[in-house]
Image (cartoon, rainbow, N blue to C red; front, side, top):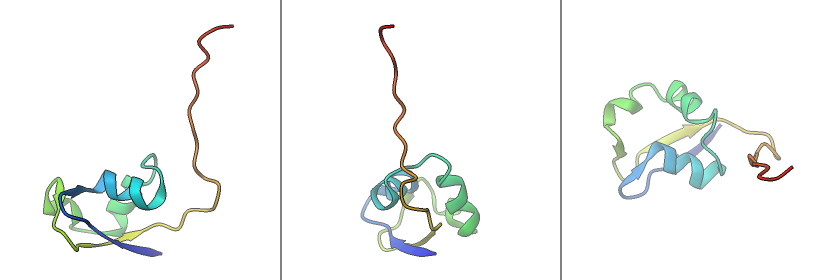
Length: 69
């Protein structure tokens, strides 16, 4: 597990994106790993420690859209 600390005026989604590079399928895991974190409100207090899941390298994905066939 990794621990990250919230920056000033940071939301959980932003923290996940900043540290892990994504939010899909991560934010829910973080809430499970940190009971009571959602009770702090949408903006985390600065310096709040947040336990993050370990994600394997290369898990970042980019959705693409094909505009022309």
